[in-house]
Length: 453
Image (spheres, rainbow, N blue to C red):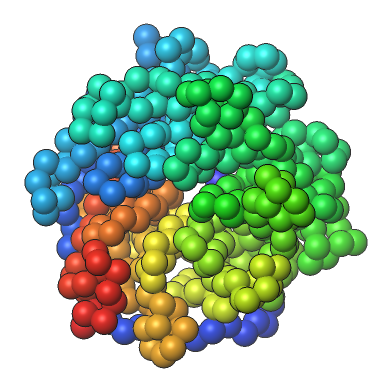
């Protein structure tokens, strides 16, 4: 989490695509509040979240086992078609759980395959990291078991492999943001595929490095994967102010399979914000769907210092031509909201978390109750990404940090509150809230947005 006290306030005049709300409602239909079946203090259920069709995967990297923080990930399914009732169907832990591995720090779900990062796993070295894959015995079963443990062939102590993870089909992308190939903490990312190296084996296909990697760039802070496209964020990249060693303007690198040769994963582009600035942390969060990429910059100075923003990029006819087409800033943005701390993207819908928004207690600038904004493409004009609503937790309170993680499916979206206290005796156990998208769209499930009203 970015600490307010460490951020340098840089007031900057910028221009962005105007946000024109198509709807003025500040809420969506709240379907459910989810929590672990065994909540405990400081377990941070909801520090990471992923959604695939009717399955929800939620990380709790400080989950306690025998009094030690081993970490866990929880699988939920809806028990009815309206998705108002969700049931925890599995709790995922490694075959050999170990304390302080931060298992569940990152999660990703594709179909019925779950990827869970443990960036402080100590095999082969202290905090080298690992990623675990889980799947049920069949698509309708809830008997989830570990099917693989991923570790790259050059893993070393302190790499934090698994700090970020994305899975799409039978391919996994993993960030290792403290790898040192291009200098201390320059970072790297790895791609694994099923059946590579043998039937059923999840083998390393390649290691990704940016063409301009430098020390402390932290390449791999966030990753996103869609088909043959991989996005790897470099949150501490210094391009916007190269004379400063710790500029932290941020960037995102795009790699594509078969670019530069058959089976080669070549870098096709490097993305930076049109108004890139010091300490914007562009790349704190990334999401991709088709030829559209959404990138969060939670400390971007837009209308207010550190209010944050999210940026939309789209690819043109040239595979290397990626252009920024929108900057998403909510209509009620205020200072230090951290808009863009988390992002999710599916079709024409974007979810943007604002983890330090203060709606629950606006008189307190350190309230940090949090919120999540929903944007739609073509709302307010062709190719305009307009704000269509805002979600907050019905029971929002100080420092719940609602919006820390967000995820999106065809009919609903999720925002997490990893510091929700749940009850007087259980502090910062964490929770997740499910909201319906059908409030605004009758045809969203089929992909037909013409039914939106």
